[in-house]
Image 1 (tube, helix red, strand yellow):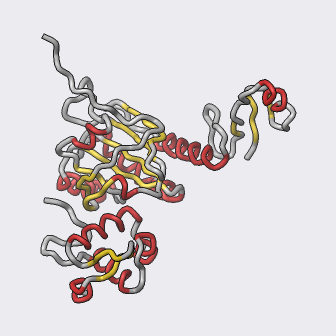
Image 2 (cartoon, chains in turn yellow, red):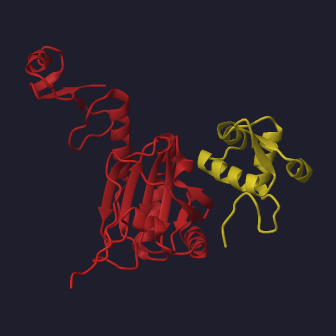
Image 3 (spheres, chains in turn yellow, red):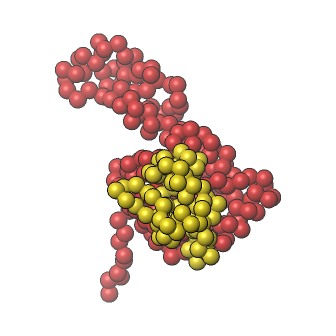
Length: 75
Length: 215
């Protein structure tokens, strides 16, 4: 089993995943900004962003993270 | 018949630390996720063992000091994520110490092989006590190897990070037993002209090649 701190095995965001999605909705778009908004260390943010992109909740556009429709819906 | 030996190129001081992706107690992490921070990547022989338990409590004790130095911790052993979780929960329950940093579950020995953490003459199945101090650009700055029986000295790890950061900031070296606040060593002159000038530059010079200054 691959451990995923931001997306639970049932495919829903975990509490840290929700915190990241809320930060993006609030305007944070880079790992540094998301780390500042959530209080998570940068390495955790980078790892979590990969998971949230892979799960379809976030996507990258012009080097910025934005919510997908699934990301909007889950919040 | 000649015995065939696999030769692994190990990270060396000044070289780029090899990137990897590995399962940890805090999710799947890559070495490159730590870019921008100093990193202490360390291995321990096994979960639920006495010396390793004392080391993990000691690493947790210096965690806040490391954070002040923009430094993260990343542990590793060849145990599973479930074993790591059970162990750190046990340490918290029995010893009252929370382990705040991630631990790699290197079951396939991929990362430990990459970093030369298994020394077969010590153990073919366990990682020895390695410490790799990696700078924010991913360059290996210090490598320490300890045997299975000797727990690490956390104050020395902090001291090395202080020394490396002081060197980077002030372009100086640090003498034996240096600690923050002590005089540092000015890099030795490279020419006879610089050597003659060095002793007139106001440093505390024992001779032209050994000059101290206060920061």
